[in-house]
Image (cartoon, rainbow over all chains, first blue to last red; front, side, top):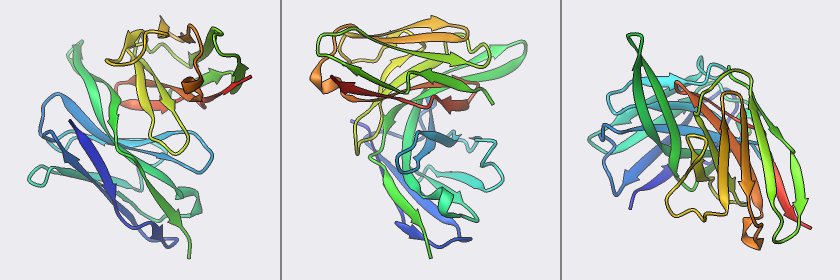
Length: 130
Length: 107
Protein backbone atom coordinates (compact mmCIF):
# COMPACT_ATOMS: atom_id res chain seq x y z
CA UNK A 1 0.00 0.00 0.00
CA UNK A 2 1.42 3.34 -1.04
CA UNK A 3 2.34 5.68 1.79
CA UNK A 4 3.73 9.21 1.77
CA UNK A 5 5.47 10.80 4.74
CA UNK A 6 6.38 14.48 5.06
CA UNK A 7 9.41 15.49 7.11
CA UNK A 8 11.26 18.67 7.92
CA UNK A 9 11.58 21.48 10.46
CA UNK A 10 8.40 22.53 12.23
CA UNK A 11 9.68 26.06 12.80
CA UNK A 12 11.26 28.39 10.25
CA UNK A 13 12.39 31.97 10.74
CA UNK A 14 11.01 34.78 8.56
CA UNK A 15 13.03 35.42 5.38
CA UNK A 16 14.57 31.95 5.51
CA UNK A 17 13.86 28.93 3.31
CA UNK A 18 11.33 26.28 4.22
CA UNK A 19 12.54 22.80 3.20
CA UNK A 20 10.42 19.66 3.34
CA UNK A 21 10.84 16.13 2.07
CA UNK A 22 8.21 13.57 1.11
CA UNK A 23 9.34 9.96 1.31
CA UNK A 24 7.35 7.48 -0.75
CA UNK A 25 7.02 3.87 0.37
CA UNK A 26 5.08 0.93 -1.02
CA UNK A 27 5.55 2.08 -4.60
CA UNK A 28 8.04 3.66 -6.98
CA UNK A 29 8.25 7.38 -7.53
CA UNK A 30 9.54 6.55 -11.03
CA UNK A 31 6.20 5.16 -12.18
CA UNK A 32 5.21 6.68 -15.50
CA UNK A 33 1.56 7.00 -14.52
CA UNK A 34 1.83 9.55 -11.73
CA UNK A 35 2.86 13.03 -10.77
CA UNK A 36 3.79 14.05 -7.23
CA UNK A 37 2.84 17.26 -5.51
CA UNK A 38 2.70 19.62 -2.55
CA UNK A 39 -0.40 21.25 -1.12
CA UNK A 40 -0.74 23.47 1.95
CA UNK A 41 -3.49 24.59 4.29
CA UNK A 42 -3.12 27.65 6.56
CA UNK A 43 -4.74 27.33 9.98
CA UNK A 44 -8.52 27.39 9.65
CA UNK A 45 -8.39 27.98 5.90
CA UNK A 46 -8.74 26.06 2.65
CA UNK A 47 -6.36 24.08 0.47
CA UNK A 48 -3.77 25.62 -1.85
CA UNK A 49 -1.84 23.71 -4.48
CA UNK A 50 1.86 24.60 -4.43
CA UNK A 51 3.23 22.57 -7.33
CA UNK A 52 3.78 19.18 -8.90
CA UNK A 53 6.67 17.18 -10.36
CA UNK A 54 7.13 14.17 -12.64
CA UNK A 55 9.87 11.65 -11.94
CA UNK A 56 11.79 13.00 -14.92
CA UNK A 57 12.00 16.37 -13.16
CA UNK A 58 9.33 18.28 -15.09
CA UNK A 59 7.65 20.76 -12.76
CA UNK A 60 4.46 22.82 -12.62
CA UNK A 61 4.02 25.56 -10.03
CA UNK A 62 1.21 27.71 -8.69
CA UNK A 63 1.74 31.08 -10.41
CA UNK A 64 1.23 32.93 -7.11
CA UNK A 65 4.19 31.05 -5.52
CA UNK A 66 6.32 30.32 -8.56
CA UNK A 67 9.01 32.90 -7.82
CA UNK A 68 9.74 31.31 -4.42
CA UNK A 69 9.13 27.58 -5.00
CA UNK A 70 11.43 24.79 -6.10
CA UNK A 71 10.30 21.17 -6.19
CA UNK A 72 12.84 18.44 -6.91
CA UNK A 73 12.87 14.65 -7.09
CA UNK A 74 15.43 12.03 -6.05
CA UNK A 75 14.48 8.75 -7.71
CA UNK A 76 17.37 6.87 -6.08
CA UNK A 77 15.90 7.62 -2.65
CA UNK A 78 12.26 7.49 -3.75
CA UNK A 79 11.48 10.97 -2.46
CA UNK A 80 10.68 14.48 -3.59
CA UNK A 81 11.29 17.79 -1.89
CA UNK A 82 9.91 21.30 -1.50
CA UNK A 83 11.89 24.49 -1.00
CA UNK A 84 10.00 27.72 -0.35
CA UNK A 85 12.21 30.78 -0.01
CA UNK A 86 11.76 34.11 1.73
CA UNK A 87 9.02 32.86 4.00
CA UNK A 88 6.71 35.06 6.04
CA UNK A 89 4.03 34.38 8.63
CA UNK A 90 1.59 33.89 5.75
CA UNK A 91 3.43 30.68 4.88
CA UNK A 92 2.48 29.12 8.21
CA UNK A 93 0.41 26.05 7.31
CA UNK A 94 0.03 22.32 7.30
CA UNK A 95 1.99 21.08 4.30
CA UNK A 96 0.83 17.91 2.55
CA UNK A 97 2.53 15.84 -0.09
CA UNK A 98 0.44 13.75 -2.44
CA UNK A 99 0.49 11.44 -5.42
CA UNK A 100 -1.37 12.67 -8.48
CA UNK A 101 -3.17 10.24 -10.76
CA UNK A 102 -4.68 10.95 -14.15
CA UNK A 103 -3.70 11.08 -17.78
CA UNK A 104 -1.87 13.08 -20.41
CA UNK A 105 -3.68 13.96 -23.62
CA UNK A 106 -2.35 15.10 -26.96
CA UNK A 107 -4.47 17.79 -28.55
CA UNK A 108 -3.55 19.81 -31.62
CA UNK A 109 0.08 18.75 -31.27
CA UNK A 110 0.38 19.78 -27.63
CA UNK A 111 0.38 17.79 -24.39
CA UNK A 112 -2.29 18.52 -21.80
CA UNK A 113 -2.10 17.12 -18.27
CA UNK A 114 -5.11 16.11 -16.18
CA UNK A 115 -3.98 14.87 -12.75
CA UNK A 116 -5.69 14.94 -9.35
CA UNK A 117 -4.49 13.92 -5.86
CA UNK A 118 -5.45 10.36 -4.97
CA UNK A 119 -3.07 9.48 -2.10
CA UNK A 120 -2.05 12.01 0.55
CA UNK A 121 0.49 12.13 3.32
CA UNK A 122 -0.69 12.93 6.83
CA UNK A 123 0.71 16.45 6.68
CA UNK A 124 3.29 18.36 8.66
CA UNK A 125 2.79 21.68 10.44
CA UNK A 126 5.26 24.43 9.64
CA UNK A 127 5.23 27.65 11.64
CA UNK A 128 7.06 30.75 10.46
CA UNK A 129 8.14 32.77 13.46
CA UNK A 130 11.23 34.37 14.91
CA UNK B 1 -5.93 31.12 -12.96
CA UNK B 2 -9.22 29.24 -12.99
CA UNK B 3 -11.36 30.32 -10.03
CA UNK B 4 -13.66 27.82 -8.33
CA UNK B 5 -16.74 29.16 -6.57
CA UNK B 6 -18.16 26.62 -4.14
CA UNK B 7 -21.46 26.97 -2.30
CA UNK B 8 -22.71 26.98 0.31
CA UNK B 9 -19.78 27.69 2.62
CA UNK B 10 -21.55 25.84 5.41
CA UNK B 11 -24.51 23.54 5.63
CA UNK B 12 -26.51 21.98 8.43
CA UNK B 13 -28.58 18.86 7.70
CA UNK B 14 -30.20 15.92 9.46
CA UNK B 15 -29.19 12.27 9.26
CA UNK B 16 -30.88 10.76 6.22
CA UNK B 17 -31.16 14.07 4.35
CA UNK B 18 -30.08 14.54 0.76
CA UNK B 19 -27.22 17.06 0.67
CA UNK B 20 -26.07 19.00 -2.38
CA UNK B 21 -22.99 21.18 -2.86
CA UNK B 22 -22.26 23.12 -6.03
CA UNK B 23 -19.05 24.28 -7.63
CA UNK B 24 -18.71 26.70 -10.52
CA UNK B 25 -15.55 27.18 -12.57
CA UNK B 26 -14.61 30.55 -14.05
CA UNK B 27 -14.02 28.88 -17.41
CA UNK B 28 -14.76 25.59 -19.16
CA UNK B 29 -12.86 22.71 -17.49
CA UNK B 30 -14.70 19.90 -19.29
CA UNK B 31 -14.97 17.03 -16.78
CA UNK B 32 -11.73 17.71 -14.91
CA UNK B 33 -13.11 18.18 -11.42
CA UNK B 34 -12.69 16.15 -8.24
CA UNK B 35 -14.28 16.23 -4.80
CA UNK B 36 -12.52 15.66 -1.47
CA UNK B 37 -13.66 15.06 2.09
CA UNK B 38 -11.56 16.41 4.95
CA UNK B 39 -12.18 15.59 8.59
CA UNK B 40 -10.60 17.70 11.36
CA UNK B 41 -6.89 17.08 11.76
CA UNK B 42 -6.79 14.71 8.80
CA UNK B 43 -5.60 14.85 5.22
CA UNK B 44 -8.21 15.22 2.48
CA UNK B 45 -9.65 12.03 0.99
CA UNK B 46 -10.52 11.64 -2.69
CA UNK B 47 -14.20 10.82 -3.25
CA UNK B 48 -14.98 11.69 -6.87
CA UNK B 49 -12.77 12.28 -9.93
CA UNK B 50 -13.49 13.30 -13.51
CA UNK B 51 -16.68 14.95 -12.20
CA UNK B 52 -18.70 11.76 -11.74
CA UNK B 53 -16.40 8.77 -11.15
CA UNK B 54 -16.58 7.28 -7.66
CA UNK B 55 -13.18 6.45 -6.19
CA UNK B 56 -12.72 2.78 -5.25
CA UNK B 57 -13.95 2.03 -1.76
CA UNK B 58 -16.07 5.17 -1.42
CA UNK B 59 -19.72 4.54 -0.43
CA UNK B 60 -22.25 4.82 -3.23
CA UNK B 61 -24.28 7.47 -1.37
CA UNK B 62 -21.67 9.94 -2.66
CA UNK B 63 -22.04 11.09 -6.27
CA UNK B 64 -20.98 13.87 -8.60
CA UNK B 65 -22.25 15.34 -11.84
CA UNK B 66 -21.70 18.19 -14.24
CA UNK B 67 -19.37 19.34 -16.98
CA UNK B 68 -18.05 22.57 -18.42
CA UNK B 69 -18.42 25.15 -15.66
CA UNK B 70 -21.16 23.82 -13.38
CA UNK B 71 -20.77 20.84 -11.07
CA UNK B 72 -22.76 19.21 -8.26
CA UNK B 73 -21.78 16.90 -5.40
CA UNK B 74 -24.51 14.94 -3.64
CA UNK B 75 -24.80 12.78 -0.55
CA UNK B 76 -28.02 10.83 -1.05
CA UNK B 77 -28.59 9.99 2.61
CA UNK B 78 -26.45 11.83 5.13
CA UNK B 79 -24.73 9.66 7.73
CA UNK B 80 -23.13 10.83 11.00
CA UNK B 81 -19.67 9.90 9.73
CA UNK B 82 -20.08 12.29 6.77
CA UNK B 83 -19.51 15.30 9.00
CA UNK B 84 -16.52 17.01 7.40
CA UNK B 85 -15.48 19.80 5.09
CA UNK B 86 -15.83 19.10 1.38
CA UNK B 87 -13.70 20.68 -1.36
CA UNK B 88 -14.01 20.72 -5.11
CA UNK B 89 -10.82 20.90 -7.16
CA UNK B 90 -10.22 21.53 -10.85
CA UNK B 91 -7.15 20.09 -12.57
CA UNK B 92 -7.11 21.58 -16.01
CA UNK B 93 -3.63 21.05 -17.49
CA UNK B 94 -1.91 20.86 -14.06
CA UNK B 95 -3.08 24.36 -13.09
CA UNK B 96 -4.81 23.14 -9.97
CA UNK B 97 -7.19 25.22 -7.85
CA UNK B 98 -9.60 24.35 -5.05
CA UNK B 99 -12.97 25.68 -4.06
CA UNK B 100 -13.28 27.46 -0.72
CA UNK B 101 -14.81 24.42 0.99
CA UNK B 102 -18.21 23.53 2.45
CA UNK B 103 -18.43 22.73 6.14
CA UNK B 104 -21.14 20.14 6.72
CA UNK B 105 -22.72 19.80 10.15
CA UNK B 106 -25.42 17.64 11.63
CA UNK B 107 -28.62 19.46 12.59
